[in-house]
Amino acid sequence: MSTLFSGTGNLGGAPELKHVDVDGEQRPVADMRIFFDRRVKQKDGRFGDGGGFWVTVSIWGWRAEAAAKLLPKGARIFARGRLREETWEDDQSEQHTQLRLDAEYLTVDLLCIDELTLRTKSEAAEETEAD
Image (cartoon, rainbow, N blue to C red):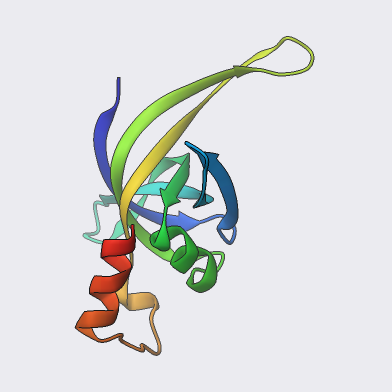
């Protein structure tokens, strides 16, 4: 079972792009770790650290390629998708669990952008149709 999740956090490292076999076809997927923080209002009116958590985020298709190309470590990211818990056993038979977000959408916080190059509508539409 999965749950819809959206949040803002910082990349712990640059996304890692790989290609995996899905029904006989090689598809790009980018995996990244994001620390989703929680900002809370302090008594003095300013906002401070309220804790947070790490999530492994995966995004597929042309968005994976763009993420790997454009997103550096530390980038402030908004992510939306399906959150799930992943469990596996390692070589020493120890059980591990982690949160994983299968992202449908990623965007960069505007406060982190110094320069921007836009594609035309038709270029963006072609990318969306190919996915």
